[in-house]
Image (cartoon, rainbow, N blue to C red; front, side, top):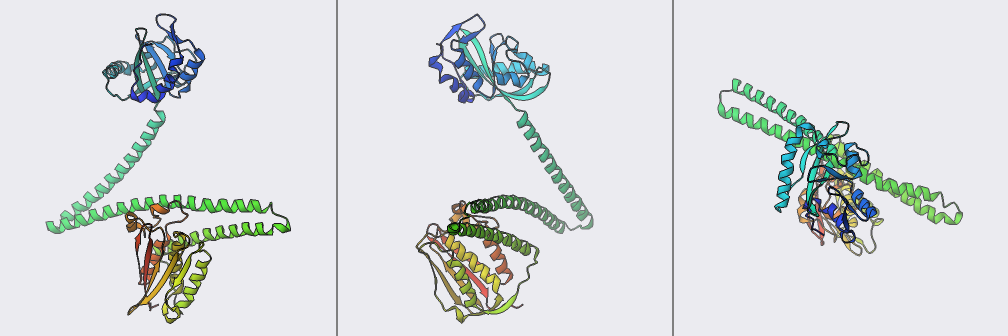
Length: 447
């Protein structure tokens, strides 16, 4: 049996044939055609490949074509056999393809790696379509054959056209922006004879354009992240609500009240989770549009701390504890009480969620001349060093929490609120050891 030479490009399909290579015996029917003795196995292998396959002899006549190739070119079964290969090519490509064909085969025979041929095919109904061909020459009983693996590139070319169309639109936008910039520069030159001042104005304008383009890109990225977030974060709780609602119908007996209560609690928790997400989005909109109206009141810190700890205790994992080091009733603030509660809730909730069982969460409170300082320490998974500079970015989530439910907007929201109220937030964190968050807020905020 002569040894066939296969290019790397075809190996994933050719090896499908060679799996059964030792089981097949070849015999000669006539001078132009070689068939497998076991026709059923050959036909299964030949038709199994979804790409088109055509085999031509040394006279460039087609001796075999699989169903995929026949459908691709619009021919009935067996209709391509004994036709010249050029029947599949538009007239204008026949000379060019002949030269490419010969060069491609010579490169393969020389043992060099090659890439596929890119050209157009011609169907029986004279419809042209783009295709890619990979060729493999082989010899059987001193007769030369070429196996062609053919891929219809129509879909890919359409995608490329769409990309080209988008690029054209972008280029037009760049041209329009450039034209506006050139017009502005021309006006500046006519009005201002001072070169240095003109140059400074030009740099300023270019900087504004670059900044505008940067903000536009960032906005598009935020929109994409937002859609992905909404899709993911809403789908999971909604699925839980639907499942619990369906199961509730099955528990109608009096003694099944415990099971009903379990699913009702699940529904309540999921609805509350979705409500919190919607509230977060509302907060974002208010911060972005500067529509947030803060309510400044005088209150004792113990009221806020007791409420925060009470809510957090319902979320604690087994063995987790919250420790408070100071007497919180000693501190009185003139601030937005709800914003402080939101801030502490967010940080402590994260500490609980990202810390293992049997760990402590510590709240320390201190006071300097004008500010109250909160230090919240946990023993959780920490924040990877490379992610720390992005942790307050909207929708950002560290790589070690991507599988945990969350929106990535909580820290962004409280940072915006704190800055509006004259406060700050910062942190220190070591991965797999824990994090420490610092919140500093003026004790008195003028209303």
